Each structure stands twice: as structure tokens, then as C-alpha cells.
Image 1 (cartoon, rainbow, N blue to C red):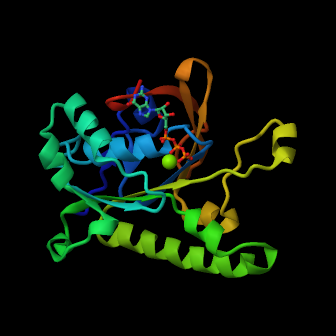
Image 2: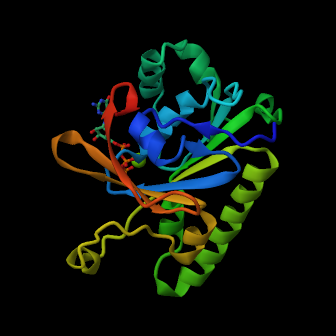
Length: 228
Ligand code: GTP
Ligand code: MG
């Protein structure tokens, strides 16, 4: 129960970039432009978290906190199909936070908690410079809570984040800046940026990590989820 495990992204290259995958007892953040694959990666992880993996990992259940109403059971079915899993069983093992029941409270069975996205409500609820300090304080409390959960229950936390639409960054040749400021930067263990390139390909790049090199790899989004 206390051994750290890693969850596959669905892409061998992406997993290699992450030295195996999304790690438990840590918070992994992805950010990137709309359509870059954040939600598709979230859905793929919902399925791969249920499959046995290296070092005796037996698979487990998933909590999906859907703040942008992008949770899609039909996508999960097609990803489950790709991995030869029973589609209904896969769906039963995912708790979408809008449908929480007492059955779901058993500790120890959950392996992955997804928040897609961490920032959407905060950006709407706290608007403008004056409210920024308050927003950051609340965001900090939430992240501390997630960190505690990840360590206490040995689960992987996966959050998605948005990017600034600051044209100054574009001019500096770096259009992909995560929002959430220092609070998110410090709270996330590993930060990954996603972006779209030509031919429907996408690039995942390690943006900040205590142990991973700042490399990048190409991956694709398919009907079966994230792939090479
Ligand atoms: P925002 O939430 O808008 O910021 O974007 P996101 O990063 O969450 O994007 P998302 O993961 O929703 O990616 C959507 C893109 O994935 C679509 O534009 C398609 O290019 C691709 N996609 C989604 N489903 C499929 C599928 O079944 N097959 C293929 N080939 N591509 C898909
Ligand atoms: Mg999304």
C-alpha cells in the first residue's frame, strides 16, 4: 500500500519522458492550449489506472472531479476497448465527483484523483487584481489538501491547468505559461506542458520537475486515448 506506483499515459514515449508515468504520492500538473489533450489524457489515465502495472501494482479506482463538464463515458468506453477491458467495469470503477455515494468511501481502493481543471472556477469566482491574494490563498489551501491526500492514501493526483493569453509571452517566443502563479508552481510536484503541432501531433514537455530532465516527446490523441 505504501509503495510508490506510476500510471501509464497510454503513450510509450510520454511514459519514458516521465520515467514511467504519473507518480503516486505526488501532484502532476499538465497545462496547454485548448485541444492540446489535457482532458483526453485525464480520460486515458482513468483507464490505465485500472490496469495492473510494474512492481506489483494491481490497479484501482479513480475519482474524477469534473469542473468543466468534459467527463465523457463514451470516450472512456472507446479507451477501455483499446486496452481490451470490459467497458462497463471500467465505468463502474470511476467516480465522477458529481455522483458521489457512500459506497465510494472505502479507503484504499482509490489510486488516482483527477481535477480537470484546477483553476476554472477560481478564475471566474475571483476576478481582477484586488481579489488575487484571496484567490491564491484559497488555491494554496486546496493544493495543500491534495498533497496531504496523495501522501496519506498513496494515490496519484493529476490536475489540468490553463495558460495565459498574454501576447507579451508570444513575442518572447514562449506562449505557454501556466496560470496560478507561485502557489501552483510550488504545489505541483511535476509540471508538464502540452501543445499542438502540425498533422494533429502533440508535444509533451517537462516544464518543471524535481527529478526529470526538461525533455520533450511527441504523442497523439486517438479514439483509444493518448498514444504514441
Ligand atoms: P481545453 O479543455 O479546451 O483547454 O482543451 P484540452 O487540452 O482538454 O483538449 P482535449 O483533451 O479535450 O482534446 C480535444 C482534442 O482531442 C480534439 O480536438 C481532437 O483533436 C482530439 N480527440 C478527441 N477525441 C478524439 C478521438 O476520438 N479520436 C481522435 N483521433 N482525436 C480525438
Ligand atoms: Mg479539457
